[in-house]
Amino acid sequence: MRKITAILSLCGVVLANSLSFKTLESDFVQTVTSNESNIEYHGKFYARDDNKALWIYDKPTPKKIYFDKNRVVVIEDELEQAIISRLENTPNLANILKKATRIKDDLYKAEFDGIEYFIAIKNELPTRIDYQDKLGNKIKIIFEDAKKNEVISEEILTPVIPSFYDVINQ
View 1 (spheres, rainbow, N blue to C red):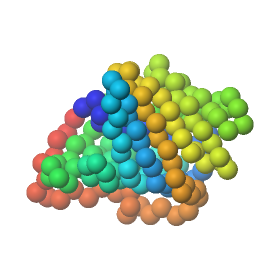
View 2 (view 1 turned 180 degrees about the horizontal axis):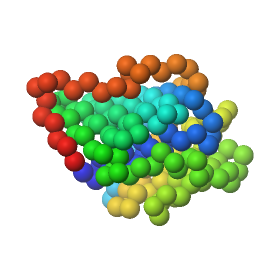
View 3 (view 1 turned 120 degrees about the vertical axis):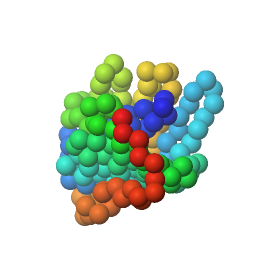
View 4 (view 1 turned 45 degrees about the vertical axis):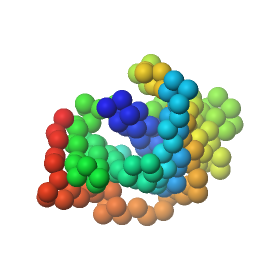
């Protein structure tokens, strides 16, 4: 559950509009450091300014995390399960970038719920986000091949849960 909370926290960070984009997509590498051990995640990220987003984790374990205004859906194909949470029950961090303030030409800082987020920018696109969660984990997300304001279809951002999956509502 701690890893899901960390993942959900990071997901919301990139959804806000203050750094001005209608859509954003990027490959990413997320590193979580806890007690001197690292876990590295790889995948693809999609977001629109209507607070819809999708994080597709390819490695080490496949997983998809869908966000919309009201809920988060985590689909884990290997476990044949989907976890559906109301957004009020998960960290709603979609507004973090709206509150971000520029501290250097290429660096923003935001604070939400006692956590400081540092967002590095290049060519008006996020390239890196660093923060430490409430459990003491250090999280670093590196964005690669980022593109903004390209069309991201509703189909991509809509979760499809196979009928035989276990569905857990939180």
